[in-house]
Every structure is written in C-alpha cells, then in structure tokens.
Length: 473
Ligand code: BYC
Ligand code: FE
Ligand code: FE
Image (cartoon, rainbow, N blue to C red; front, side, top):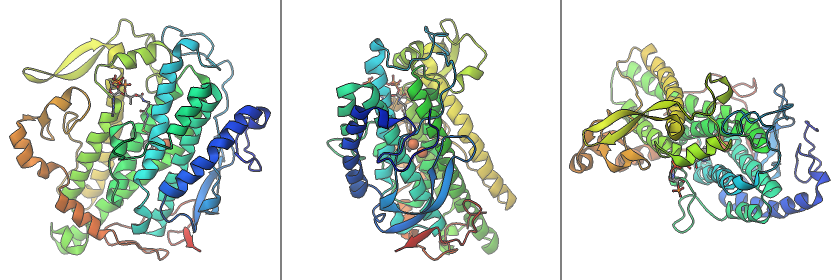
C-alpha cells in the first residue's frame, strides 16, 4: 500500500490508480468537468493568485502536509485515503463483528450511494457559496485561509467521487456528473441540503459557516468514518484531518471579530461599536442564531427510520462509536428526545435506534457550546457584561418537528404574529446585513487588517502575521 502521494500522476493518489486503467480513465474523464466547474464557480479571482497553501503529500499522521506558494490554477486535487487498519471489523449493527466490507454489499447499494452523494454534494456547494469572498478579504492571512478551505472542500468532492466511480459503476458515474450540475441556490437544480443553498455574502457569515456548518461536517464525517464500508471509512478519516483547520478558521475569525468589538467598547466607553467601524455583539449574536439554526437542521428529523436503518445495516455509526460502552446494536436502548406536543416542547424517551440523528445533534450542540464559552471568555477578559449564547434547538427550524412552530431563542413557543413582529431582534435584518456588507472592503497589504476584526494571534505554519500569504501576480 503506497502511502506517499505521487504528484507525477495526472490524478495524484494513494490508491494505486495506475493499476486500474478503467477506473483511472473514468476519473480522468470526470477531471476536466471538475476543473471547468472550479474555473466557473470556484473562487472568482483565483486564476491569477499565488497562495501559501498546504498540500497533502502523504497520509501519515505526522507530517502529511507541505506548505508553499501555489499558483491557484496549478493546484492539484487528488484521491487520498487514510491507511487501512489491519483486520478491521464492522463495529455496530446486525453485522457487528464481521470483517469490514471492501466492496459495496449488494442490498445496501442504493442507501450507501445516497449517503455518499449527500456528503459529496455539500463540498462543492460550500465552494460555490464562498466564491465572491476573496474580493473583500479583511487581510491576506484571511484570504489565504479562505482559499485553503476552498481547495480542501474541492478535494472532499474528489474523495466522494472516487468512491462513486470505484464502487458504484454506471450510476456512480452519473451521480458524479450530477455533483457538478446542481448548484448552491439554483432555482432548478439546488444543492441537496438546506444550509448549502443559503448565501455566504460576507466574512462574518463565512466565519460563522466554518464554525457551525463545517462542524456538522465534522460530526457527519466522524459517523461515516465508523462505517462498515471500509473505503468510505478511510476516505472520511483523512477528510477529518483537514476539517480541524476549517473550524479553526471559523472560531478564530468570530473570536477576532468579538475581540475587536470589545476593544472598541473598552477604548471608547460605548456600546455603539458601529460608530467606530466594528461589528457590535448583538449583531454577532444574530448571525450566530442564524448559522446555528440552519446547521442543526442538517442532522435531519428527531425520529428517523432512515438513521436507524443506516446504523443497523452498519453504514453510519455514532460519533466515536467504538468508545461508547454499550452493545452497539441498540435494539433495547432508549434515548431522550425533545419533541412537540399539544402542551408545547417536551422531552420523551424513545427507542435509541430511531433517535440517532438527535443523538448526533446533541453531540454537535455540546461541541458548539464549548466554542461559545471560549468566545465569552474574550468578552469577559475585557470586563464587558454581555454573553453570547446558542439559541434553543427549536428556534428557526426548517427540518424536524420544530419546523411546525415558531419560538424565540429561549425556545418559548410564540405566535406567527409575534414572530413576524420580532424576528428582526433575533436574526440579521436587511439593515444588519447591509451594515456588515458595507464594512467588507478588501485589505491586501501584508500585515494589515480591516477595521472590524482584530489581527490573528499568530500566522500560519510559523510564519509571521505580516507574511505575504497571497501574491498577486
Ligand atoms: N435539508 O429521516 P431523515 C459537510 C430529508 S456537512 C433537506 O431525518 P436522514 C460540509 C432527508 O433527506 C455534512 N432535506 O433523513 C460542511 C429525508 O428525505 P426522504 C454533510 C433534509 O437521511 C461545510 C427526509 O428529510 N454530510 O460535510 O436520516 C462545508 C427525512 O429525514 C434535511 C451528511 O449530511 C436537510 N437539512 O438525515 C463543506 C452525511 N434533513 O428520505 C462540507 C450524509 C433531512 O424523505 N447524510 N432531510 O426523501 C446523512 O447522513 C443524512 O442524509 C442526513 C439526513 C443526516 C443529512
Ligand atoms: Fe468538507
Ligand atoms: Fe470543511
């Protein structure tokens, strides 16, 4: 098994593509369409820039990445799977204990394909959503991070397309083509999941997206990394190594925006942060409410027979499945789920198998809360009496039981009329968005940052903050 990646290949890979000429040819036929898509719907100014990027050169946990300036059109996407685990088993569901599958089990084919397509579809969607942000970067450091995230999401599409081509024959190839035909926000052919059809029009939205929505990616990928279908597991395991940086971009980006607001408040002894070109904490809270709520939708229905089926069949596990101390079959277990009934929102016990979406959502919300706590420590350090918080999970939902009602951020059920009157207190208004948009002026001198955000605490790859992370050539 080759673990270093050969960049002399037309499609860099560690799956020994050269030994499977049919597969290699099929992927080489898909490649030009991908590159065309990147040119048309990838970062809008990426054709000329040189960006200080990390590129995967091996899949070893130590030293897998190489850093250097890359001309964006020359970036090389490839197919990288984490190393195989010896004697890997299916760790949950009715097939628990059997050897992991190296080929798609026949009866599971359609279901597995659908999971892979859903995962794959989100990756290019996010690139499309972010394509105009380069025009308004708050610094070269941030511009570099944007492109880093974009090229890796592009590679995540490659990861899923490889699985479709290698394991699903003709319908896999058709699904791979369709990945380039659906587009974020398209009226006729939208992306599959709600959050990926929203706009990412400004950098505060981008940071919130990479904090909240890429974090859904972390939890979904971690669940798919448990899969009994070994190639999917290995693909997702390697994708997860890249995901940490995406969430770092989000957490530190929002954190720096908060820090700047606090600095203005402290320096000018005022709450009127906008007067001094910052983004005030209440506006940050509204963006948080929006991105959290569209991201919790991505976990699906509270009670899901689909999710039960994925689990029982060994296709999609729980977060850190093998660290959980139970029978990993869940035929008898129960789980607490908040649902809606005539008296309002109530917690009930349901069979654990049907509650797997909700369980993953709980894991996700706990992780989000830790990030919010770290943001609040920044505010606390400045001696400011304001705290950010996650809205109730029932707030502003489009999927699941709570989509039928309206609540305030505390989860209090309210009337349509109250919602209509008050939602502008909780979600960004057109005016809030216009204010944030007006701040989005590009800053492209090395070491300089926009007025609304604090500089990063340190650079990338031990480079100084004023390093020329992007060169305009
Ligand atoms: N929008 O039984 P349910 C990432 C549909 S992010 C629209 O709960 P299931 C990334 C659902 O399809 C990670 N439709 O469904 C982040 C179903 O339709 P049918 C992406 C939705 O299948 C940032 C019906 O409602 N990966 O990587 O258990 C940047 C019944 O619902 C939505 C994955 O999602 C929605 N939000 O749960 C770049 C992993 N939610 O059957 C990348 C793969 C539900 O009635 N996907 N529906 O026609 C899955 O595991 C599951 O498909 C879901 C949905 C958890 C998404
Ligand atoms: Fe991704
Ligand atoms: Fe990501």
